[in-house]
Amino acid sequence: MRAIGARILQVLRQLRGPDTSDAVFEATALLVGAGFFVVGFAIAFPVFFGHELAISGAGSIGTFAAYGGALTAVLAFVLGRLLVRPQEVRPEQVRDGFSVPGDRLRWYDLAAIAFAHAAIAFLGWIGIAELLERSFIGAPVFAFPGAILVSVAFALTAYVSFLTAVALTPMVLSLVLAVFLVVGAFAAMLASSDPDWWRLNLSALGMSTNHASVAFNVTLIIAGIMITTISRYATAGLPVDDDKARRGRFIVRGGLILMGVFLACVGIFPVDEFFLVHNTVATGMAVVFAVVVVGLPWFLPSIPRVFVLFGWIYVLVIAMLGAFFAVGYYNLTAVELIAAVLIFSWIIVFLRTAGSVVPHPEAAAVDADPAASVRAERAGSA
Image (cartoon, rainbow, N blue to C red):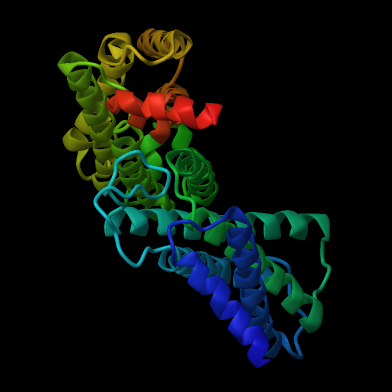
């Protein structure tokens, strides 16, 4: 046992350095998942003992897995961030795949990302339990298999959350953002106490009289924080050749951050309580999106032209939707829903595109130091 403990400590010490290999990450993620499996079984089996449990609903294994999975996601995420924290942060050091030396994620960034992981785990296990309940109608679950199933849910949640925490690149965060938005939006729609909410508008889900208001508004607030976080880092490393390109990059970054702030404000100010403010920030988000997309080839000449065309088509489709609403062909919910899907999908693809055009650190060093290319050639010939 002492030898096993020494081996585990050795692996954890390796994780504290900046040069951690993917193999060590995977091995440690498996250890973390196994640990949560053991803890989950130790907690679930005594609770379930002597009971026949339902798959979903109050007091079911689905509910237990959902609440425990949300807590597991946060704990595994925090554990991952602590274990990869370098002992000494140098000004020139680059972390998390971002291209800004010495920069780092702030505490509120990490809090929003951790919450997104918890929400995905909670809603995901609730949804899986509901699906299984409808597949095995009336089937009871006994204590031992129920505890095993819950433990597996904890282990999978911890494994995924830990691996995400140790590799928080803009592309990974864009995927987390996409999953979080989809899960949060569908959860709000399913939890709505007004079955006819869609006859009004999408913001009706966030009204204080709707039972889904908390899920809907919190989803928008957290998503807004995540967009501002990812935008700041994803655009920082875009190549710029002169002051004009640098200003263009600043404009695009500011526009994306402003869109994130507006999105968060849409959730902070429900439409039934703050009608004017809510509509102003919602409209402002669409306007900023149009300005950024239309002006992208002038702001960021390094962006691929295919992506520019992709954005212009999106703006044109949104304008057509507005015209259809004006003539009464579409209702407001349809316009808002399609426009939201287009805007968020564009943001996610932009973050991934921006990450793909960021020059490799070694290439950037060669550009900054012409002598480095000579040294590289000599090293290659040697």
